[in-house]
Image (cartoon, rainbow, N blue to C red; front, side, top):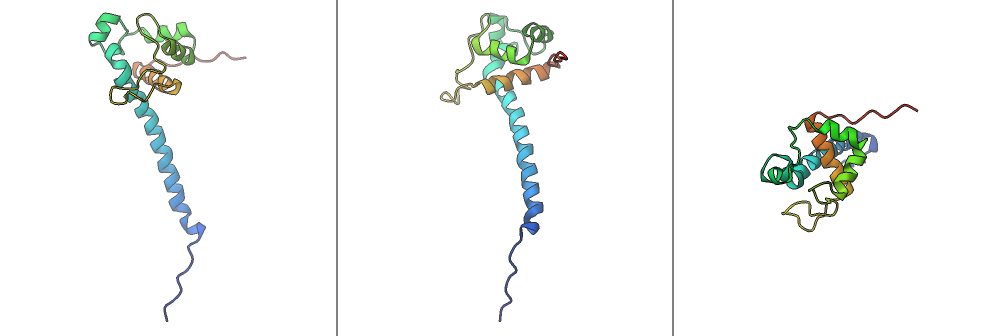
Amino acid sequence: MPRPRPKPSLFAALPSLLLLCANVSAARAADADETGAGLYESACAKCHSGGPGAFFTRAPKLSDKVWADRLAAAGSVEALVASVSRGKGKMPAQLGLPRSKAEPDSKLSQADLQAAVTYMLERTGTAAPASAAP
């Protein structure tokens, strides 16, 4: 006569569930980082990397030292993202444009622009301004 199998308990599955949650959290953080880098490459680099777009638009490159001044003038990262959303100088409004040539139906959202601007600021070593104490 075969022995009955014990029923699996939640307690026995707990280590596996914790490991799964930790992996999902790490993957989301990596995706957010990749999103900023990927969006920069697909939507921003043609003008901000020093290629032909930068020559014609005079857009500041990532290596330029103007980013801290731009952030200070804007007052916050959110204000800088708003500037990108509506356009500035020769840069057209970016909100709603295609994310890339490979994804023409996928449009840039406010969160996408936030990720790209944050990526650019981090790459230039520019820190967000400290908020004023009340």
